[in-house]
Image (cartoon, rainbow, N blue to C red; front, top):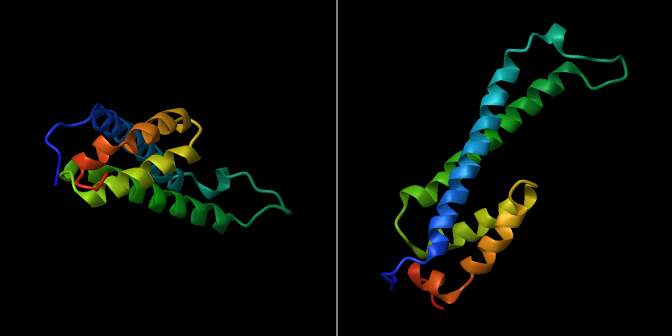
Length: 125
């Protein structure tokens, strides 16, 4: 059963997701821009990594950042469901990997795990 009153942490969680969408969209745009760097401009050394590694890493960075944009957008477009609470827990924990969001993630997680938030998403307290 979904609780009718929305806990304040849900608003802050959506703001956090919005920031993460912005952050990973900037990384995706930077990845796209990196594809347009001429190969002659990329600094290399005879002992250094091959030039194809640069393109591979940029492709991985673009793929991961676009995937994270989509995943962080899911709480914005979905109704409160038990799986959204679980996804939210995972998304908050992803914030622990980022120096910009580690403190916010800590406070979000503390309030996210409270029984009223679980009940709002239809999870048992």
